[in-house]
Length: 387
Picture 1: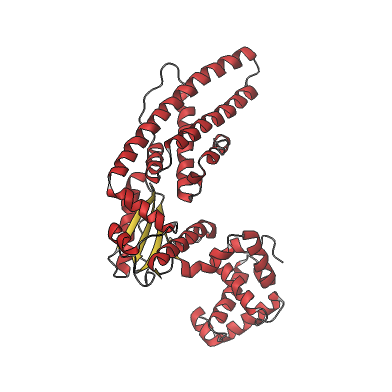
Picture 2: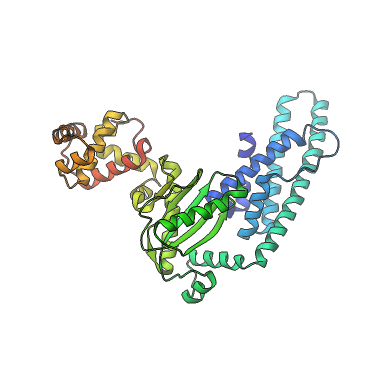
């Protein structure tokens, strides 16, 4: 199955805007896998007319998102045809490799071509029907203009703040916290669950003004009108994840906080941390550095030296010196925060200097940056073969 889906990669060249967004790309890949599985399991092996089964849930969900995003139907059809050609090329190569008898091989390919062609035509008709219905519904409502206006703001297009606030029902003059939410739940329930999570986030700040727009069938962009990020994290529903930008004011802040939330969104799978709600202020340095993993690991290895090892004992030493430096190089305060004796802190600091091979105060800024990256990203920031 993986080989078949990998063969679909040329489709992204037809519609690169479908692949530029992480959530949209993931849903597109899921739909491709599900269609391929159904074709192989139900379409190819049978004889006689193909059964007119209900459209796969993954296909319905992603085509509706494409329609709401305004991706041209002709572009989708071209991408679909490329997918059909990619599958057929893979199938012919597989049949040729498995069947030596020329007559049998030709018979199998003729049968397969009839089935594959009929299967794809059925799915293409479904795509057109689902797309048209959803696009008509979307364009007929006020949501279309609302979503388009939000995208114009995010794109930096010239917007008059007062009329835009009226159209959105949301005061763009306020300070905003941008939020990107997503879930691994069922598409049918996902957006309602994410909307509820936004309301819970707003409630932690006593904020009532929020603005949301779907970013996929299981992803949501949101803005909360408040002057600070949530002081306490609410209990997010199971399977829901949220990335927060920092508070910023006006149209520029509306864009900037959303962009910061997107940076956190991209970092969270890489970081592999258990938290399901992460704010930009907590990981801003990692957002900057993690975009170049190889360079980040070189910096960490150079600054930490022997402290870059991945074992638990070395991790405890890194945490001790990180808290010590964060406490203004105050051993007593660090000991209180770490719940240990001050002499233990001093002992560990001596061991840190020994492993690092230089005093704590030498290249202190770079040293603290490396410690912070190791703290936030764990083994992903550490070299694979530390010194």
